[in-house]
Image (cartoon, rainbow, N blue to C red; front, top):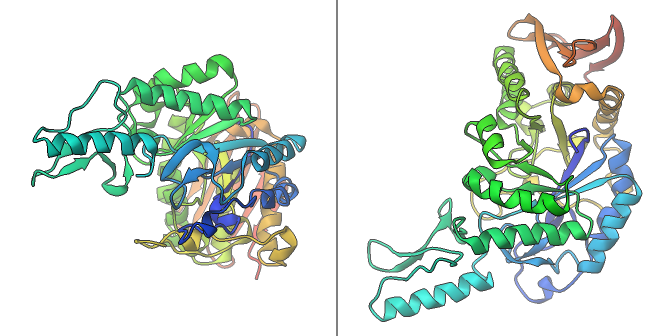
Length: 425
C-alpha cells in the first residue's frame, strides 16, 4: 500500500447527499455510491491507484457521528451499492481504504442510548452513575450534579468510546474484519492519536491474523510520531508538519521552514513512511492558502517528489478554492458535490490534473522515491533546490524551485530535465 498514490474523497459531499438531513425522505436509501464508479478511470488517469473514502457508515449527519458500523449510510446506498464499488475498484487495480471513526459515535448509537438510560435511572435514584467493566462509554455528574458523559473534544454530538473497555476493542476489530471480508484493503483511523496506542496494539494484530496485508493509516496532528507508530503498530501517520510547512513556505516566501521540516521528515522515514498531503477534508484548500496557481503548482511538486505516501484531495486536482470556517456548515466549502461524471467539470483546472499525472508518472517509474530522503543544494528565502536520494544512494532526482519572477520548478535526473513546471494562466 505504501507504493500507492491515493485520491481522497468525502463521499457524502462528493455524491451530493444531504449532510444535515431535515426529514426521513432525505435519509431514504439512495445508491449515490454508484456515482463514484464513473470517476475511477479519472482517478487512474491522474496516476492514482488508491481510493481513500471518508465515512460511509450510517450516521446522523456528517458521517463522523456513526450510529451503525455494519450498515452503509442509506444516503449513499446499501451493501449492494458498496459491493459494486469494491468490484469496480478492484477490476481497475485500485485499492480501497475506508475511514474508521473509532474514537467516538453519534448520540443515536444504540449502546450509548442504552447505557445513558441506565445512568439516568441511577441519578433519579439518587446514586452516581455506575460504571461496569464492559461498558463502552463513561457517564459522570457535572459540577451542578447533572448527568454528563465523556465527549470527543467537547462536542456534545460525539460521545467518546471508553477504549479501556474490552467490548470496544472487540467491536472495532470485528468491524474492520467484517468490511475487509467484503473487499476493503486498508483503513484510515480517524483521530488515532486521541486513542491510547495500546488500544491499537491490541486490536490491529487481531485484524492482521485474518488479513496479513491489512494496512492502517492513523490521523495524527501533534505528538511523537515515531513513538506512536512503534507503540500502536499502525503503519503510517498523516504528516501535518509537512503540510503546514509546504503552504506556509510558499505563501510567505520562506523556504527555510520547508527545509527544517524536511529534515524532520527524513528522521521520521527512519521509522516509517509518512502519509503526505497538501489538502484534506478538514483544512482550507491549498489553492486558497497559497493564493495563486504558480505556488499551487509548486506545492504539488513538493508533495509528489519527497518521500512519503501521497494523497490528493478531490478538488485539489482541479485547483479548486475553498475556505473552511467554524460552526455548523463550516466544512461545506471544502467538501463539495462533484458532477455525475468527469465531463461535468469542463476544462476547469485541467492543467493541475495534467501536472499531477506527469509528476505521478515520474514517481511510479521510480518506486525508490517512496522512502527517499532529501538533501538541500541551495537554500534561500525564495529559492530552494534539493536532491531526492534513494535509500541505497544509487539514484537521485534534483528539484529546483524559484519563487521570483515567474515562479517555476525544474525536475532533473543526471542533468537531464524531466519536467519544467511553470505558471499557467
